[in-house]
Image (cartoon, rainbow, N blue to C red; front, side, top):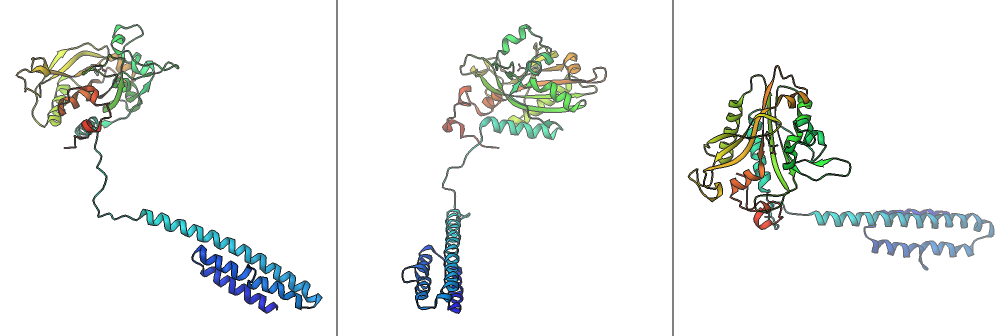
Length: 342
Ligand code: PHE
């Protein structure tokens, strides 16, 4: 009988190893442990053996029964895992050569303009820097020569957090930390989202994008500033553009300017977009104020620099002929998905 027990175990093990689905496994279970199953049969057979044999054989058969039950459970787990894998694999099956059923996504017009500008400035040796949207008063104002109670703050009211931090009102807020990070000489641009407490209309939004640029080195002058601005704008508009500088006041530059570009809609002859002046105000800029350089740890006897704050949102409006600034944050795919990289 002992031989029989071993043979049953071997046969069961083989069958379990070969089982490939749960229905088959159930059949095996019934064939061994069911009422008329082989192991149940062995137990019944005990009635025919002597009392001494009954003890040892009984033990062996019960052991076999336990092992059989455990092995069946293990096989059940294996089959469940295999079935899951089959399901996942079949779900993942796809034909890469088929055209996509989904409509392709598109980039936001501001992303497109930003990437264009990053490429242009990168090719002129500028680093592209990232900066947070939540800053402190020092970064946004104090380090830029705008002390508390300075009237220049009036134009840049923003959203304050309870801990005294604020949503940055201009990308200039990164100037100080970038000066401290790299020291001089330095060429960097830093695009970013800015926030102001504005009454919203077709030209004003509480959330908009700027791109700040800074170049600090020995002998940097306004001519360098004009050169870089002109090169950049000609690349963006893919044509030669004219620029002009008008005086502008910003506490962190001296002298400060408003840089205008000839209206890209009428070419300079005058139209409603440029209020018939032929010029569009695009980029405030100037030579970095020595106080700001000093706050940034730069030696003002040796270095000078320029900074500009390009209105990315305005540039995108001009480039793509978007007349309402609110379209940018509207989330309307109908208006936002029609632009593509050049
Ligand atoms: N940060 C200024 C603004 O948003 C623009 C600016 C940047 C002016 C750099 C001069 C130099 O109004």
